[in-house]
Image (cartoon, rainbow, N blue to C red):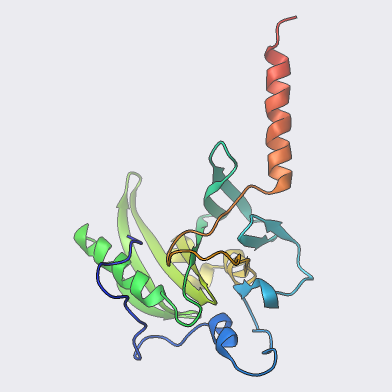
Length: 224
């Protein structure tokens, strides 16, 4: 779904949604541009008065009532981030992108095409970050609403997938929307292929807790 099509790169169309605030600021000439009113922010412009969970390329604001579920491999590399608030969920991903143009429009088209191949009709709607993609999909638990939101930044793109109540009704984003607008992207200086997932890792606190639990389990199973 996120592989680049063969042939020459596809550029942002003039008729597509305007670039995000983060991307516009990175393209501004002259002195240091003013900080956008909301995120996702690039690390260079993020406010520093908010407590955040450090996952490497993503810093997630700590919002009361929002549960952060992280799936990682044995090496500690994070493979999936899901935030849960009541009957709504938000899955986050962050990917490499060019500095001078966004990739969300192209990615959105490909998601819609993939859904169409599966017999799902996706619909484009306007949202606070530009054009979003909504659909009703079939799951093992029955039909479910999903909503894809993309935010282009300087050399990165955040893809947010809402599920549940916040997908069916954007006005019910609540605290999950607060998390998205407070997100910070830490893009390293390494040259990466466009759309490659930026590296994510378990926070130090989670790593230490997991190690303590493993040690306790090992000691508990040790024969006397």
